Length: 115
Image (tube, rainbow, N blue to C red; front, side, top):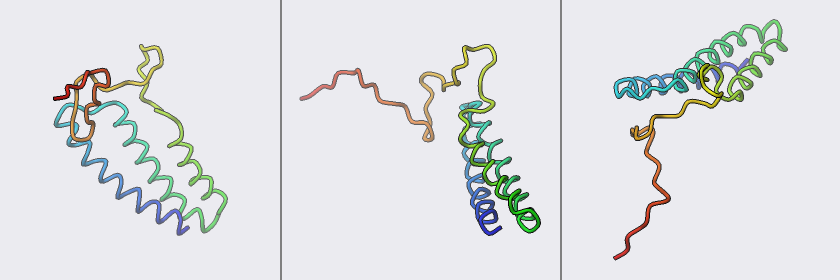
């Protein structure tokens, strides 16, 4: 029970951080489907942790299953972010889009000038 309570509190704090980041990305029109999917995963995780607290009092195995299900949810890669019309590849950010949260990758093929 204590495990579920501590993870619910920690998850809520991280969800608040993610929501602030999403607000910033939405304002910059850089919010991706993967970001929305991750926010959904956070809400589901917190709901499962909260549900496992009372379940731990009456059905401890059910509470452990709820906690384990959260792990499975986060292990599954990109659940719900695939484009049905694509070849199954995950969506990537548009070329040239950068933000403090998604810095541009350096061009490793560019020649370095030395003086």
